[in-house]
Amino acid sequence: MFDFFRKYNKIMMIVLFLLIIPSFVLFGVERYQGFSKDEAVAHVDGASITRPEWDAQHRVETDRIRQQSPNVDPLVLDSDALRYATLEKMVRDRVLTVAANKANMTVSEERLSRIFAQDPGLATFRTPEGKFDRDAFQRVTGRTPEQYEASMRAELATQQLLLGVSGTTFTPPALAAATINAFYEQREIQVSRFAPEGFASKVTVSDADIETYYKDHTSQFQAPEQASIEYLLLDLEAAKKNVTVNEAELKSYYDQNTSRFGTKEERRASHILITAAASAPAADRAKAKAKAEQLLADVRKAPNTFADVARKNSQDPGSAEKGGDLDFVTRGAMVKPFEDAMFALKKGEISNVVETEFGYHIIRLDDIKPAVVPPFEQVRATLENDYRAQQATQEFAKAAETFTDAVYQQPDSLKPAAEKLKLTIQTATNIGRTAAPGATGPLASRNFLSALFSPDSLSRKQNTEAIEVGTNQLASGRVTQYSAAHPIPLADVKDKIRAQLVTERAAALAKTEGEAKLAAWTTKADGANFAAPVTVSRIDAKAQPGVVVEAALRADAGKLPTLVGVDLGTQGYAVVRVTKAVPRTAPTAEVAKQENAQVGQSIAAAEDAAYYNLLKDRYKAEILVPRPATDGLPFAGAR
Image (cartoon, rainbow, N blue to C red):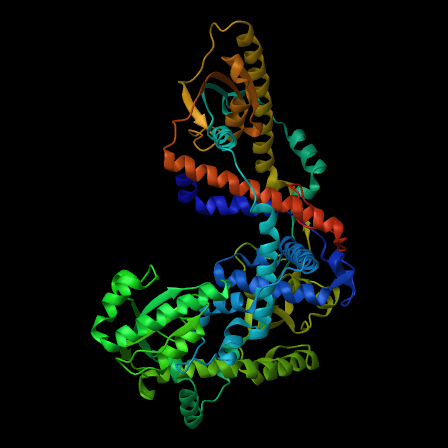
């Protein structure tokens, strides 16, 4: 099963997406827009989540998805489904945070510091001197260090809260085996297909039939309204073009950011560790420190024995057998007391005993790789691009104001705004109220398309207001030509209707014939015409339709062989002879262990969900905006 998941991981991601966010159907934008901007969209424990908070968090979520999946369909990001999913996640986070706070779940400074020190992502924001670069962090992540710390505290506290429930899950091997075996169950089947193609010659469709169908289904034969448009897009790339680069400013920028363009100083150290947990009794810690002090005296008397002493005495399993060698590291890789001591040593020096949360260390500095900063000329192109990008953020704010004013003050043309900001007027044809598959940029924005198709825009053919279509992206457009929705003439769809009616009627004849054969073969099997036997399962359908496989698996395994009929819709009908149940091949011990763990994870997730539902009721979590209509599974979030 795990090979199947690995092989078809994209398919499984789609399946999981459908389980989490059902197949939402069209949902009127006006139903969400019926709320005032500051009105609450949800309540948790008496506190509100407002529309601006929701909008801001949804921008964060869509930006994160874009970074992780650059090719994601913009229609998904702009859908009511994903917006509602964002709100449900906000409610869930708020519920769990409230529960953690009321349960006095706290995260110690020591634990938080340890996590930060070991996070390789944060190490990139430390300068060679060990100072944390706040500006770089905020520029890249969009958050201040304080906001990041607060989010980490909340996340760790809620993890601790949920661990008290899911962390106690026990999965008996028999339960895991029964669950996995049900997934893997197989059936040997024979199929007799009754395809519509075999009955098409018996179908007659008259012109009167076609005309009647056309009149009864006029909504199916409508040409949608369409427009030809022109539009402008202002984004950071456009703002970059208006940034002037001064050589002196560029060199100053280089001096301020040398750590980003070169390699940081690296130090190689060896250490001897005598462990003593921070929570250990004072007497135990004193004993460990005394031992470390004795070993320090030994290696200072005979420095060349340091590696041997480390092998025999160090309690760091990762480095002891290597004579204490820790290889080269940069600032930010070690806990602060250890790091400060290591970077204060000269090559060959041995430190005093250093106390950390892990115990007591004796550190010897073995080598130093100095920081290497490439010359200005070598990185000038990169510098200029980075500098332009940084300045473009400020330039964009100014340009956005100019853009907004220009498209409003001269509403009959986009040309003045384009000339002021050196933008290119773009055109598009056959644009509808909803974004076409594969559309990008403004043409994928629901708000932009709604503005274009507003009554005022269509009648006056004036510029829309400046509309945010993405992060640091503003667009304005105008309709240059419009065609209203209209019926497609019968003559243009006559052949299509005829083919559809032939298919439907042939499928009905195929079903009638199949049901008759099912009844006859159930009574008397003589003359039954089945294909060769095949063994099917949920993960290997052997080219059989899914409904055929499901029907075979639903058949009572204790009453085989048996016949079942399956309606295949426009594909006809199938009579399925289920001959026997086929057990799966026994898994290896390792696979069985993995499967047991997977079932355990599923049970733990179910317990988490049940506990969360309890907390929702306890803290009166309520979403106030309507849920988008759906024909799929209910979304497992707050209601």
